[in-house]
Image (cartoon, rainbow, N blue to C red; front, side, top):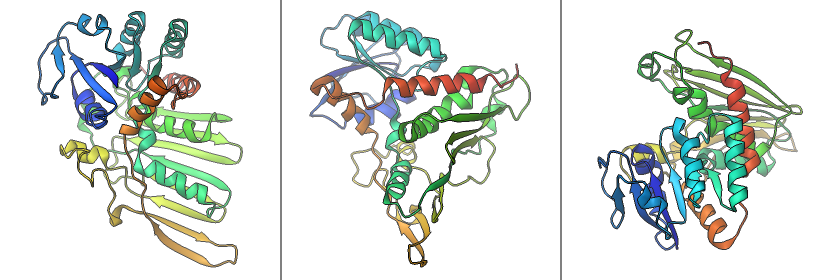
Length: 339
């Protein structure tokens, strides 16, 4: 068994972590959850100790992994603290605010022989896994362009933020997902073009970004906005022979928001109306258009990966250099905002 604890008892822990760590009952034990206030506003996890004393985690020799799910400005401080107490650590996204902070955490973990990783659950999004399946089928031919969109229509969010901060920026909050997907699949780009904007004006929240990553002749565009009344497709993949359009996103978050949990067999599963459309010309010049059954997304695979690393010695699924590159790109992109 892998015995874990959480620092933080808010939405992140209860919506995006516990439903997936507790799913692996034969592998993971959630022993302790810490929050400074001690208030419990979510349903308690059976068998878990809730505490307002962080030393209940740091001084417990049974706890092997500490998961940091606090607001992002605290990630570096708490990640370092956990390592200094001799514990392995998983840090919610974004990992840190600066490349220097990320490098320091990895150095400290190496010195102490400890595990540290960023929680990149969106590698196991259904739409992203389906795109990989289509690309690897070869029917699109040589890839030319990939468009990735993560849109909302939530004007009340940026309008409620009166001053810019990295902690509330859309780039750090959401490009950390999409950039990780690109880096995990395509690697380090040859070049990057950044467009990071504040649609409401100077010193307001960063509420829009449009990043172009170049890989030889191929361009991958990562685009997001809080002001899209009609969302753009989640993925559009263009090749020399065809195109794949996946209009809708992974449904795990949609179900979690309805408190429809992973113990349901159809949790996060796409229905036929969510399937992407693949259009291509085959080698004989014949036109094809068909629906592609979506792959099944599953965020618990992050915890499966960590279990395999800490218990069975397998390599980390989220490589240090991938997270370092991502933070380097976020830090460079956010420099475009105006204070």
